[in-house]
Length: 326
Ligand code: SAM
Image (tube, rainbow, N blue to C red; front, side, top):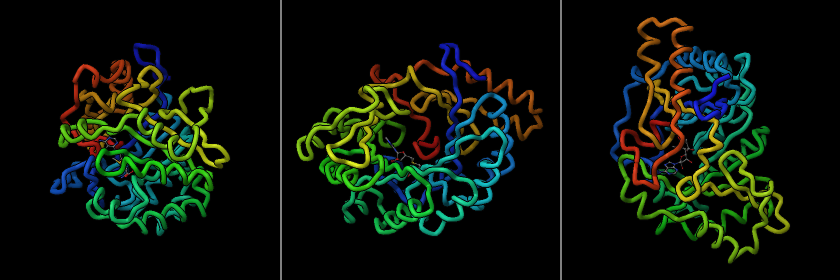
């Protein structure tokens, strides 16, 4: 079992399969971003070896993200190999959904269990503006395909950006009246690249909740207000689905964090919002043994920071979100 020095049991790894993405969301990366050459990214066998080592360290829950995980070559066979690794109990993915209509069936058959889709608005023009190139119909087809093949429960993640989609939270939340989905609203976080914009255009969890309640009525808090992962979960009256609100910036949940991240270039990132990383790929390529790598992983996890420092003005600048894996 992996613990950090604050006694948190760490068992959830989010793996960025690539920093490449087929969208350019305005709050995530610049339009003219240069992606890393593939040789710098973890190769399939390297990812699989690290997954096995994290299982040995006590990890059982894995999420594939990016960048956009579905643009990675051989994504279906990689999913199959990870899903069939003994000790991997839960394998999910975070995706923008653009390519999902054609991949959902194969991914489900390969062993993927669930998907979180990112969708910040239901308005086609706004979607285009926010993503700089996406077509909302592709995403919608992807979500429906995922539901059809049983990659459920479906979760929809929306980052709320002032001046772009703060009004859209109502229409998005209303999806839960008729669909058994969890629609989750995420406070925008500041990273390298677009820090000023990300801070100025933040819409707080409190405002998001107030906007939804003003139009759709009271949100009943579920689970006695306990967090479900990172989200506080609510239900609208007569809704079949739920609304989640993720308040990373204004109400951090660091005390209950059980996760670590593997960046696309093979660095172990201990906290999304702290720059510190431990390089695993270089020693792996230099011939380190499994035991040596495991020791490096356990030592790094032990040093997981207590929490982020946004309230103190400490902003991580060394990476965009797409490299770390959101
Ligand atoms: N391409 C996939 C997707 O769109 O879901 C996976 C990677 S994306 C980086 C993962 C999530 O991070 C998305 O829901 C995205 O909206 C979110 N994200 C990106 N930049 C963010 C920021 N500055 N603050 C909060 N969430 C952000």
